[in-house]
Every structure is written in structure tokens, then in C-alpha cells.
Length: 76
Image (cartoon, rainbow, N blue to C red; front, top):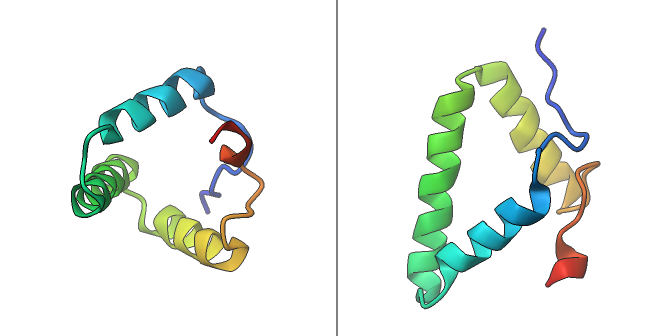
């Protein structure tokens, strides 16, 4: 059984967060949501493991945004 990684695993989290925000600049709310949806689907395809994706869905839904992953809320 592959387990979802919920500890810090990004090599440059601050850089990625800045890039993510930059990609949302000048987008309408609808376009921003569409970008997020496309990104999620691309990353799900890259992961490719249905069990891991189920774990991610459950963790995201259960945590209400408060998982073990580092929070970006303080950066906003």
C-alpha cells in the first residue's frame, strides 16, 4: 500500500507558491478556478495511483484545509 506523503516534500516550496500565485494574476475567478482544476487533473494523472488519490481526497476533505502539509495561509 502506497501512502500519501503529507510532510514537506517540495524542494522549493516558496518559489512554487510564488509561481502559483503569479499564474493566477489577472485571471477572473472563473478562470482561476479552471486553472486550479486543470492543475489538479494534471497532477493526478502524474501521480497515477488511485489509492493515493483517494487518500488525498479524504485528507483534503477531512482536514478542511488543515492537513499536516505546511500552510501557505501566513504568506497571503
